[in-house]
Length: 146
Image 1 (tube, rainbow, N blue to C red):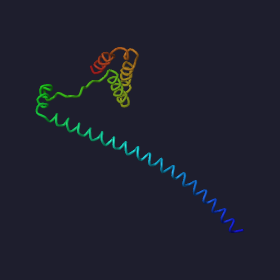
Image 2 (tube, rainbow, N blue to C red):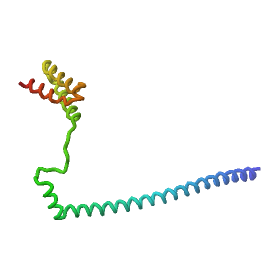
Image 3 (cartoon, helix red, strand yellow):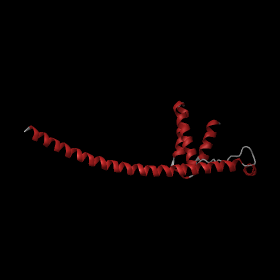
């Protein structure tokens, strides 16, 4: 009676434990494969990083060399020169001008608002987008100040 039930329960436990063992072994195999891949990737990244550091050190060495200093002096004759190219597109200027007009619009009186609205319309109209547009705005600003 009880002994038979205990044996059946133990056999059931054994089959459940064996299934869990198989799943755990599969997980272990996948984990080992993943760790191996990660180790290879890390080795490659470490090697690349070391090469980058060597390249940076070489670059700094070249830039600190007296020959490089002489070359920089020839290329950049004045102290005000810069290696950075500065340019602003027309659309960026237009957007900046519109932003300034809108901020002034909040605190302006009624008459000034009309002028600011006209400036904003001139900057954002179709003609302003296709042609320069700023010549008219500059003239309008000059007229407002005068």
